[in-house]
Image (tube, rainbow, N blue to C red):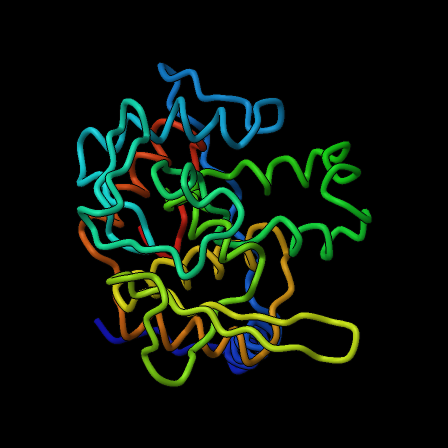
Length: 255
């Protein structure tokens, strides 16, 4: 049987629609409905610590319980860390290094300050009155276990490539570069090589799902990191756990 010829009008319409699609990136896919037999938490009513402690800690009883910046093993039951075992050493005795160097905290890969900036609601405290902010602040895809002292060092500084490999925290592959500008203190952080792709895919997910604004340079950096550090089996297992047990939707940059 011979193929039916395609009318010229239909062909032109198809080409026109293809061109339109290239000009306008597709909107994020709607969240998948959660399984009917699973009671998922309400991300808008719990705090991010409650979400992480209740729903993420059990995951680290099934995969290696390692924190993100130094590879320190931690106890999923108590979140305790032995910093000497993973080679963490404070760069200088300030703040509460003594306590925060021995415990796990939940690091926001995409800082809450970026969410405040996107929503224009002034401050983190003020933004919590808005459900979109609470959903973004509490999203478990964005929460990684980090040594408390390094969580404090990172603060809300952007991630970047930093020339050289100066190690100020013992064996930890965590680099912090600080400088001063008139009226401002600036800093940036370079995470370990084997976590850069994870950070990139979380950031790209936030750009898509929550509309967070990143500069062209940041987006190019995330794409490069994601390519150089592709999705690992552990990262995929973590994302699948979160989709099944917490959110009901996937991070499309991982799964």
